[in-house]
Each structure stands twice: as C-alpha cells, then as structure tokens.
Length: 114
Length: 110
Image (cartoon, rainbow over all chains, first blue to last red; front, side, top):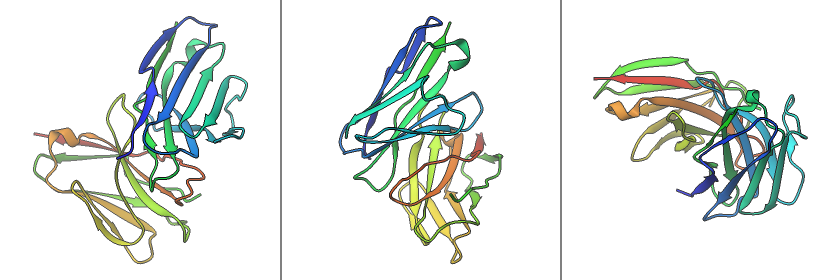
C-alpha cells in the first residue's frame, strides 16, 4: 500500500514552546490530508482537514490559532502546536488521501509537554 | 455523514473466526465502507474496503447486505497478533471527511 511518513515519532517539549509535526505522502499525491489526535484508550478525533493550497477546515472546538496546519504541496502537510501546554500532550496522527482509493495513515507522533 | 456503530469490545481465541459488525443506517449512495486496524501507539492500517456484496483479500472478508445499512468484517483464524482496535468508516472516495467511531477492541487469547 501507499506510504505516509510522519515525523517525528515522538517529541518532548517544554511548556510554552512550539512543536512542528510533518506528514509526507511518499508515493502518491495527497490532495487532502487529515489531522487527528488520540488520547489513551480513545478513538481518533478529527482535528482538521486540509486541501493542498487552501486553508484548513477545523472541527468545532479545535483552536486554529493553536494548531496551525499548512498543506503547501501535494506531498507535505505540517501541524504546528503553538505554545504547547501539558494538556496538549497526546498522540497525533495524520492521514493522506488523493490519487489512491483509500486514505493512508502516518505512524503517529507522541507529543509530551512538560 | 454516515455515523457508524460497532460493539465496544470482543473476545476470541486463537484459531477462531471473528466477525465484527458495523451499523451505518444513514449510508449514502456514494459511500464506501472501509475497515482499519490500529495497534497501540501506531497509526491505523487499512484492512479492506467495499461497496456492496462481498469483498475478500488476503487478510479478511467484508460482507455487505443489499441495503448496505451494515457491514461485517470477518477475520478467519485469528492469532494473538490480531489483538487490536478495528474501526469501520463510511465515506465517499472524494474523502471529504474521515470520522472515526468508537471502534471495536478485539482481544485474542491463547
């Protein structure tokens, strides 16, 4: 199947700093990318949907100024958690869809804010 | 968006067949049904996708009745490594939005 690479796999940062997570589709053009967060023992919660070259569409309750999403190319989307706080600690997962018949997911990023 | 309903958890033993049913009463004409598997601290992995009737691949079968208001993922002869959470998603192939339901936590015991 198609490959979606997410980086980093885990990151620890200090409260108040910003963290950028990258999501790359390695072998197909991803016209749409999704960002999720997942808390332990819970399902994936959709944060936002981004289409290449346009602004992301955020789900209700997700702060767009805190979770900055950029989808500048057909192979790369980034999620920046700005001024991170301990409550932002979570597992973040990206998904890419486009010239394929199903969406593919990255391996996830474990963010710990201390 | 078609909402999905699945059992929260299921238990099985090695070598048994496991069937997980998903209800999606509001499925639209253009919607496909896709199942994903997720292990702890990993992203979901595609298992199978179908539109109607039956689809089979090397790891699973997907049964979809004529009214398409439900679907059943069938895992033949499960092993311990099949312990995971299984998600049923419904959506069109334009992938306007991918929303996950609660998923089914499958525990396979020796």
